[in-house]
Amino acid sequence: MARAVLASDDSDLADVDTHRGGDVIIRTSDLTKVYPGMDRPAVDKLNLEVRRGEIFGLLGPNGAGKTTTAGMLTTMVIPTSGGAVVGGIDVVNQPALAKQAIGVVPQQNTLDRALTVWENLYFHGRFFGMSAGDSRTAADELLEEFHLARWGKAPVMALSGGMAQRLMVARAILHKPEIIFLDEPTAGLDPQSRLALWEILLRLHAGGQTILLTTHYMEEADQLCDRVAIMDHGHILALDTPEGLKAGIEADTIVSLHATGDLTKLARSLSRRRVVTNVVELDGELRVHVKGAADALPAVLETVDKSGSRLNDLTVHEPTLETVFINLTGKELRD
Ligand SMILES: Nc1ncnc2c1ncn2[C@@H]1O[C@H](COP(=O)(O)OP(=O)(O)OP(=O)(O)O)[C@@H](O)[C@H]1O
Ligand SMILES: [Mg+2]
Image (tube, rainbow, N blue to C red):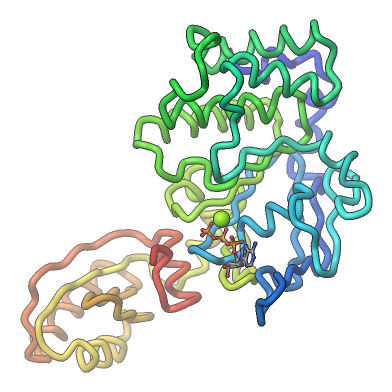
C-alpha cells in the first residue's frame, strides 16, 4: 500500500491537492556556488521555483551543477551568494530547521553499514526526534511497503543496489518531510530496479509528496517529472513541462542518419531544405530536425542522393528531451 494512503490522516498531505500547481515550496534567488580554487561557478545565479506536490527534475550532463544545487537546498553545501527558501525555511540561516522539512537520497549509498536494514530506518526516525514507538511503527510500515520486510534483520551489505536505493528512499520519507530530494536516484540501477523506483516515486507523488530529483537520463525526466529544468554549466537553459520543452522545438520529427562522404557538406545542403529546421552533426551521425514528416523524408533522401553521399543507416523518431538539450547546447547529454 502506498505510504501516501497510510498517511492520509496527515493534515499537511491532506490539503496538498488544493495547493497542487499552486504555492511555491522551494524558491532560490540568485543562488550561487563557487568552489574554492574554481574559476567559474558550479551554480551561477540560479532562480528557481518548485511548486508544492510536483515532481521537479534537474536534467543535465556530468558537471552541470545538479548535485551542487541539491546540496545547497539540503544544507550540505553552503552557497557563496544568493539564497534559498525550502518549505518556508531559509536554508542558509536556519539549516537545522530546514533539515527537518526535507528528506534526502544522496548520489552515494549512505546507509549505515554497522546497522541492520530495520535499524537504519528506526535510528533515522529517532535522530529526527520521533518517539521510539512512532519510529518503530514507521520503520515496520515502510519496510512492508517497500517490499523489504524480510530483510529487516539483515545487514545493509546484503542488499542489492536496487534494494539499497529503495531503503534510502524509505529512510528519506520516514520523518514525513515536506520535500524529498533524490540525486540521480536510478544511476547504475538495472532496468527492473529503475522501474520499481519510478513506481515508488509516482506513488509518493500521487499522495502529494513534493519531489525534486536530479538526473541525466532524459527518459527519467520525461516520464516522471511534471516540470524539468535543463541545466548545463551551472545555468538553467530551459524550464517547462516535458511536453512544453519538446513542443518548443520547431521540428516534429528527427531523422538520424549515418552516411559516408562529406557530412559537413551534406549537413549544409540539408539545412537549406524548407522542411529541415536544424541539422546537428554528432559523432559521425547527422540529426536532421524536420517539420512535416510526410514531405520531409523524401526531401532528406533526395538531398543525400544528390550530395553524392551513401546512406548507411537511417532512423526516424520523435523529438526527445535529449533533442531539446542538443538544440540548446550542440552536444549530447551523455559524455
Ligand atoms: N567539492 C567540490 N570542490 C570543487 N569543485 C567541485 C566540488 N563539487 C563539484 N565541483 C565542481 O562543480 C561543478 C558542478 O558539479 P556537480 O557535482 O554539482 O555536477 P553534477 O551535475 O551533479 O554532475 P554529475 O552528473 O557528475 O553528478 C563541476 O565542475 C565539478 O567538478
Ligand atoms: Mg551529481
